[in-house]
Length: 479
Image (spheres, rainbow, N blue to C red):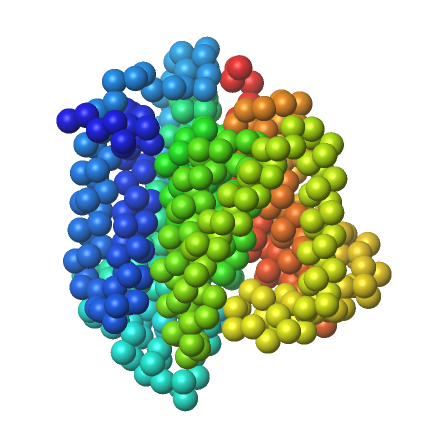
């Protein structure tokens, strides 16, 4: 069956459709679940497998006759090296087997994973609802009660379907989906089969994935799911594909509080580059995501919904107005001046409104704006903060060589005026800047924690995206 509406989002490539089944299923599940909770409904365990079936049906319903666009030429004709492919498969499957064993053999392996994530999934029950005192009684202490619910919902559904002992298999399965997504996207970006397997090997063997601390596969924290959504959006930038970017903007606010920041970053990049149709689709996706999540978060905080009810329309209006303003500024210099002016105004407003924003129930605002008035004194520590950030980037035992090679890839991509490579490089630059700002605005008394925990985890979320840019820009025989 031909479906011209779907065909404009998905190309007719079986491997590409296969790797898009999980994010489409997660988006359907997230939307249905949040809508049910807003209507005081329950979520039976079969909703998740039903969403997987619907996603598969929708993606393979497409019969698009246009040829698949491959972003490369000679590299796609490089003959595969069977020995290299077998070696990569052996190592990757071994790593996944180890991750599966460590995930199933232990509960969440960090305090944050237990308090912020695992307890919330257990409190949802089966069928999942918010009637538990953990969610409905303000007298019950619940750490991170108002954190996004997508991951706890998935784990609770898998616990109901597979049993509590097997529910955590979600994490190695998600990691396998991440590696498959990266590999197939590498092929579509013009890499040979040999190079695509190298990309999967590099992204999959980053040491911190297998560590015993926060952020690892078996930690139970939402960083892996956030990394998956960020990589999905970054691939949309690289390949100029609508559906991955749309799915990323839809999923990010449902995963972690900082997900909304990264979704707004995608919108800003699309507006800056003048990609108006893609910007419109992604704005609509983010507006829908916030519209079903923010009123629900207000309920979890036992607050009356205020502006949260109008979150979607407000975002839609502001985003489209900003994109229209940029479209009227053909001069890049004018755009930079406008951007610098806008950021300066936001900084001044942040300094004045910081004490008020610090009292917000939003977990992101309350953490970072609580210390924004200390920003002038924090600037005195700038050399120490820069050195600590650099030391973390070059920590071989955590990240391997990814952030050692990344500057070369960023420099190489900066020579491209337009194209997916330059879009991806801009995203990585800005995401690293966000990571550093998170450290700068963090509390001064636990600076070591800022490097060891917050910065490390944000960097881990960018590992797969960074390796994709490195391999696409630096490996030989690619262009």
